[in-house]
Length: 147
Length: 147
DNA sequence: TCTTGAACCTCTAGTCGCTGAAGGGTCTAT
DNA sequence: ATAGACCCTTCAGCGACTAGAGGTTCAAGA
Image 1 (tube, rainbow over the protein chains, first blue to last red):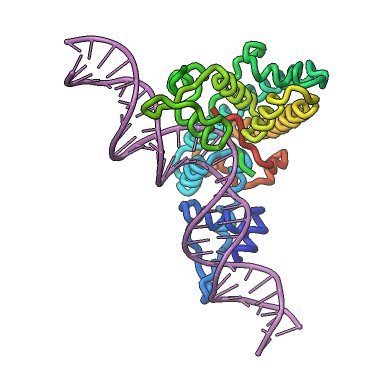
Image 2 (tube, rainbow over the protein chains, first blue to last red):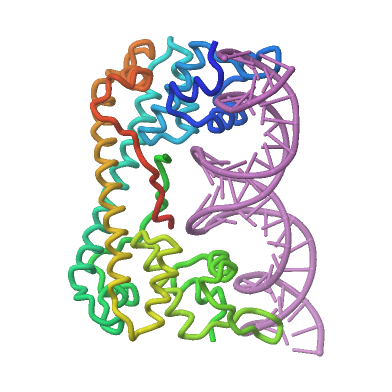
């Protein structure tokens, strides 16, 4: 029987994060000690490890919820899990492409900047004039892979 | 004199976002019509364009605030603007590296999955066993470039 | 001049995935 | 018995918006 602190240490999660996962129903309500403290067993440790690993791979909590459901029903086809992973891969690839365009633009902007006075600064100039950019960098939404 | 809607359209920004920028002091309080509606001039259009372009390049609003200050004081050296841009470039490069590691892991995970039953699903298996991963993918914080 | 309806206003709350802090209670080792 | 490390709940905050409710203003057409 693990305390929440021990579970946190073993999975590299913060204590508050575990409680947060419980409030949103991603982790089950655990057993409690006499005094009301949470006590976890192996199944809960496994589940949390699964969640954390999914997060490290950039899956959203919603995606992880779906993957957990699949993992809990071992009879059915794994096509669903595959398609969730495919979607995630595609998102990662899109993000990489977008970031590489930004990287190019930033490099160009910086290398042109001779660190003169602000009046002729390339960095500021480029920000002022989008037309000096090579790419569109419209940028869709991009948030992910927390901590 | 532009209405907020016209300004939004010209800069590709949502109306609410402009008002949000005003509440956090990134955009000045504009003039108002008799009836109390916001009215913008060219200087404000330029400023908003600068902000949006900075966002597209992945700068945080804090970084943009600093860049705006620099742009407003054209006498001083542009080394500061340069270093803000350098920092941004470094962040982008780190993010790319991390995403590429994820990409590899996801690809490996997916290609091993023959879409059999969930019991043997590679995707779920990999999530269960971090030890099957090639990389550490510890992942620092990663959020950026909202649109 | 009146009316329509699109666009504007303020204010509040929600998004995602946590994180931190306040103000307490519990557990365990000495 | 007591110290102090750990645990509890609850609430607020982060960044950068986004959405909605409920009301007002504006410009154009009849």
